[in-house]
Image: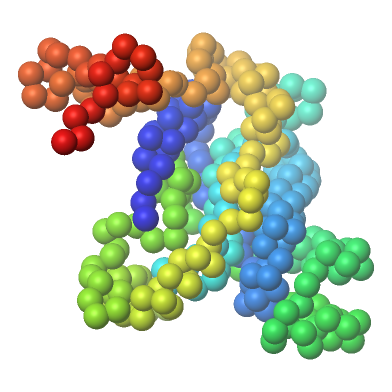
Length: 323
């Protein structure tokens, strides 16, 4: 199932020019089980709300003078799976450790090794997300199929909200990255991914699929799981995203509309040389040349001859010998 290798390489090369010489943090926002169940039947609106509530939480608390008092910039990557392929929507946010002061007055760094208080992030995130869910309900944009039908009327929906409010929402900050180079290596594992990688697939035998997984409840112990093929396919298909939903998004001073000018401002304030290729994705040919160590059309055997592709539909070009 693992493809997109070239797309990942191109994306990472484009991000290389955007890295700042500061500490980077990795913060994860997740939702409780009752909300995950609702999201499974309302993917597009609730995944979008997950991005909205996360970004508003980070930008609001980051701008608060009691915490950082500056404009943050970050990217967020949507994952919908756990190691056992069950539905587990959450956002991975990669955030430079600091922000821009108003009117370009300077760059304000975070305290070393500490980003923002996760308890404060968690409570604000819960409030913003549930407010958004309530708005969607009143706008008639949520559906309640199957077991969720008990939450479709006003009383049942109120019970769902109370249950979600009484639950601790998990926001946690992983150990900060050692530097910008580690950020790129890490991003490569977290961006252009599907629910399971090739190396975790162990066998397919007698209609049973066996794969490896980490059980985080037992200290990340490595285990194996065997499922009937139809159940494995069902779990995998759960993580197909709705059409046109963007799973990697940028916010604050890394937002698409302001990224170039804001990053130039950050680099000036941090006394870093400007990058002439800021945000420009290299061509597929350039990326493949770097990955392969040779031009992709050059013969891998003699390393001198060049591959010439012939189109059998064009007149005057010989087609392939199918005999």
